Length: 346
Image (cartoon, rainbow, N blue to C red; front, side):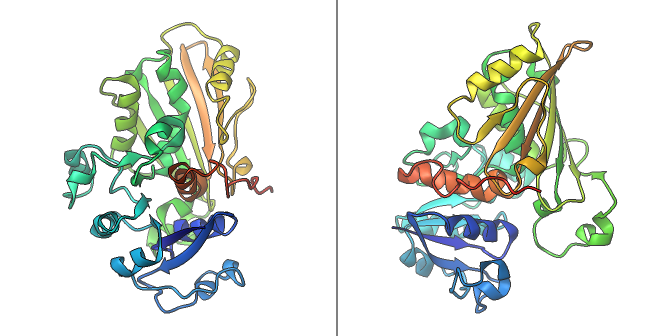
């Protein structure tokens, strides 16, 4: 059994990790930390885990955590992760980091959007953990930076088009909507029920959202040249889910049916990417609670633009599920182990 620790387990991503890891036949969760809830029983903080996890939440003491686990999930805010990850690595542990701290290859970009990086020497080693793009590099990695939720939905929507040179990268527009859990579990006025319910709003408008450089970094690597996009996120009054509608100008005449066939062929071997038939488009309701990314593609013949609609659960394929998928690849387990659960519906 692989011994794993979940560091920072009192947030939505942390409890989602615990939910998924409980069903993993090759994993034993041996340490669970939470600074704000240390000393409390896991089931008292998350009643959904009652009679499944008997542990008490611990303080984050890196050496002690490393002594209990072979692989560590860090579900911490940015900066908090880079304070402890070097210690885990020095002690010979493997890490899947769910913060933004190890997603960027360039420390200057991280500093521009977040703050100065405490251990920039690790950025060249860290592997961006989007399996459908970086699988070969994830195998054997000791440090994986788990992608953000919005970037996952946008990159998977664009990869087949960019790899085949079918769109002009300078024309990419990504319009994304997320459930409120994407903002985290911390108490914030903007996320109160009365502030969110019966409303629908954009935020991070004008290229200000921190996922923008992450998306651009990965799209640029797919193209082999710098890519700049227009990305606008929106907040939807639902618990979980992301729907991204992505637009770009085609460089060659293609029909929606032709592109749907191309997508189906491109992702034909992928366990967690489901390409819908031509004329069908995904819904967040159809991926809720599961590790799928559903894609639908068509062409606006009037404008010569391709339109790709992408749906994920932001807490699963957008966070915890993808982290487990990365762990499986790193450790040589079947990639879908522990992630076989189907979406919840209704």
